Image (tube, rainbow, N blue to C red):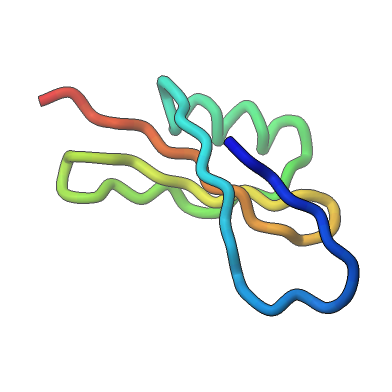
Length: 68
């Protein structure tokens, strides 16, 4: 993954996506640690995603590939 830092106002809405083995468990663990976590979404049984937010409000997406 490449992450870039820059100065000034943001001009786009990029999102880092991180693969996880279990999106539901990761969401529960992060909620327990006081992290702002969105709703886990199941995309047609193919992928589960959930948005989490860092202390500055930046969105990071956790993604779980589902078994066929």
